[in-house]
Length: 423
Image 1 (cartoon, rainbow, N blue to C red):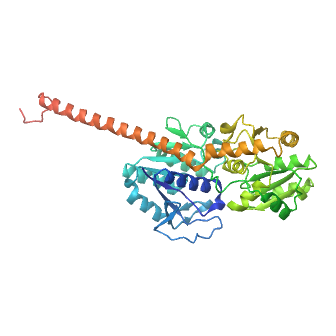
Image 2: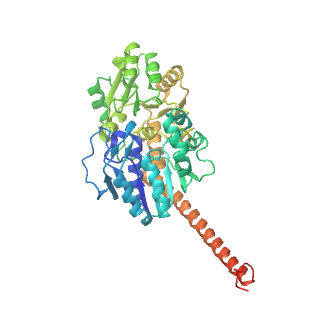
Image 3: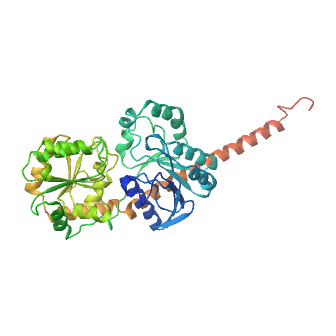
């Protein structure tokens, strides 16, 4: 099987967050199963400066053939790469399927056209971008683009990849009548693992007492995340510390810092900024529970990474990962109120903190369900179904054409439909 993934950004642009990490992990997992994987991406980076990578030629990363193309930035941080689109147009027919992400942008629309022209099946990766709530928040010009251009183009996709069933449920009418399949995001258990001596080192670095209970969150500071509720919850306790890892930019960064100062818990509130793999694994290993409280989260890869480091997780029901871990000893679902979070932290402090069976169970479950090998195996099975359905459709279409052609011949042979002068 030969697959090409068209992605707006790829490793080493780790600061873009879970999508880059999970797609890189999936692609490497597919290679482990013998799939020939190519990635077409851009040299875009979160810093605004282009990545220092070779352009217009393949780079081998974990067995994946990665092509970086020059990105042109548009309004609102959108991107466009003329060279990427041209290369896809030349090569798309040589792949069994094309996986397209960032479909809302103009480059995504041109990918749709390239796949149609090459008669190659296209799989759309949604990554949470089809939420009806996000659509309602879109500007008028975005809504016009979606309705006038993209809705029709989306119908040309052979399938839509969802990371959780809930992602399809919140998408409104976008996927009605379309083939969808659910495969979760992958996380790397070799990068995210418990680090025995990290607890002492990380806590000493940030002034956290060794015996203090610590809740940690990881991710961007945006309107979806309700880290403010966690801050308010620890303000109701005398012992909990809150570590927030991730880029310290975003619409909520200053607001949450101000809230911690207002509630006089800024001495128990640590913002680390962006942490790469090893430092992030150390931060996770130094904590006691992972929190992801969000108004919307299509999956929640960061929580899986926390589980792989041996952390139990506290999630709001809007996190897609909930459907995978509901009922497990290490998983706690909370309402989006500071009172509910405070109660859960208190119970956890009384009954669960430090329990080896919970920590070991969290990692074991995460590795079994979300490792690159496990997720890639599920992904391959779904793609094979898509390709099989397409072959069956093409066979039926060919058979119908032959029957129509034979019918026309029989019609002519019967003496009907003769042109003037044939009598």
